[in-house]
Image 1 (cartoon, rainbow, N blue to C red):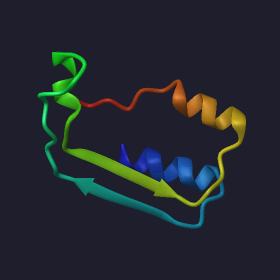
Image 2 (cartoon, rainbow, N blue to C red; image 1 turned 180 degrees about the horizontal axis):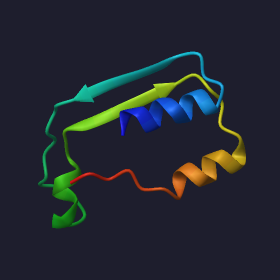
Image 3 (cartoon, helix red, strand yellow; image 1 turned 90 degrees about the vertical axis):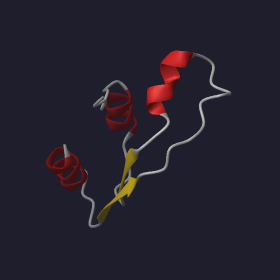
Length: 68
């Protein structure tokens, strides 16, 4: 998955990419449903300095990067 994120950044023309593994666990008492509890952490945050075109942004939003 990291390689894919780096490749996407490169394809978009990014000159910087960074990753942060957030090991925090957030509370589950106020969620809209019990199925959301698995999404409260940990998380991998990815950043690159490329600017998404509207089409590329819609493509990324339609893709799901879920590993449970």
